[in-house]
Length: 127
Image (cartoon, rainbow, N blue to C red):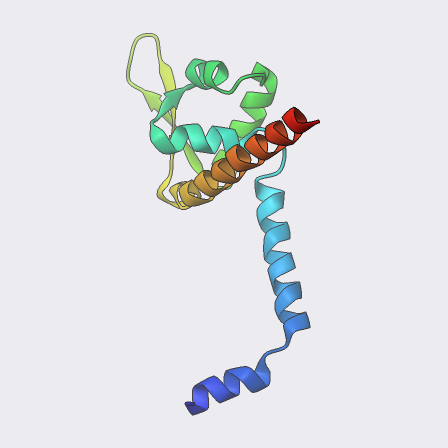
């Protein structure tokens, strides 16, 4: 075993490692909190969308909440608001390169959700 690996083993503290991970998860959840942000990000990972398209696509979100969530996501540099040179002026929202780093996470969450839904439905059918 190399000296570097031995040093890492000697310095490894599972409690400290766990608390670092919890802090990172907490930071992530603070940014992605709420019911809607991951859905908005997931939509924008596939194509830029206008406000009205997002309002239609993200089922159940109100216009006021969508506006607030878009501002939060823009402030955290996950999406960008592009004013199009059209008449009348139109606004489009796009995922940033930084925001696109969440695409794998949205896919993982979606896969888990599909699996969980199937599990719950099959359990309910057995009863």
